[in-house]
Amino acid sequence: MTSVKAPEIKQKVRERYGAVAQQNASCCGGDETEIQLVDYSALNVEVVADADLGLGCGVPTLTADIRPGETVLDLGSGAGIDVFLAARAVGPRGKVIGVDMTPEMIQRARENAKRGGYENVEFRQGELEDMPVDDDSIDVILSNCVINLVPDKGKVFDEIYRVLKPGGRFSISDIVTFGDVPAVIREDIALWTGCIAGALDQNDYRELIRSAGFENVRYEKEQRYDSSWIPDKYRQALGHHVDEMNGAFGITSVTVVGEK
Image (tube, rainbow, N blue to C red; front, side):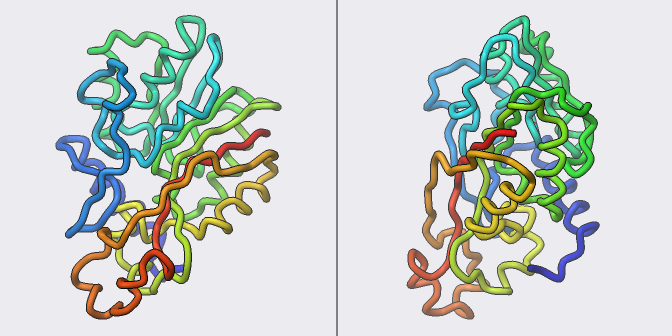
């Protein structure tokens, strides 16, 4: 898909989201454009203010059917917004674990948990291709606009399968693509860290999940976006493709669910 190497991608992702943890920014887009894809204020729930950094592309907790007493794992947990929403759903008998590879995010999430009085949550630093989580230990897995950032997505879904209990389930919001995305987009490291260049084709994404062994895999929600995310430096070169954005190529935010 791209000639950009995995170590460079991971380093740039750490740098970008380490900086985001100390500031505020939206997820999708490159250096010139950013797109706000989800607004948690619409949920009308109280959460720790500093937990919502505008990094999501969906609300996976809404389609996860989280139950009291369950153990939930959030992949790429950031400052903790989805962890805290899940923590309310599982209640005091349940537990929510957040995993993130960025030290600054882990620190901010732990501070937010303390500030919000969440005692049933835990944040662990680690990569999604090698999660610091035991086999068959998780009831529900969440993730929000993160797997697109990982070079080896197949390994991530293998890990999801490993840590889920038999009968466990996942609800994942992510960015996928449709159409023939130009190489200049795929090769742009800023668009990699901006959740776009590394996104898989929508059909390939679903098949990758199924090939990991999951059942009942389906898209619960889909929303396509216009061409506003394309950096100006590429618009002239892409020409008519930009004008035909809705039919030629682009990005879609999806929420996909499945079961082990």
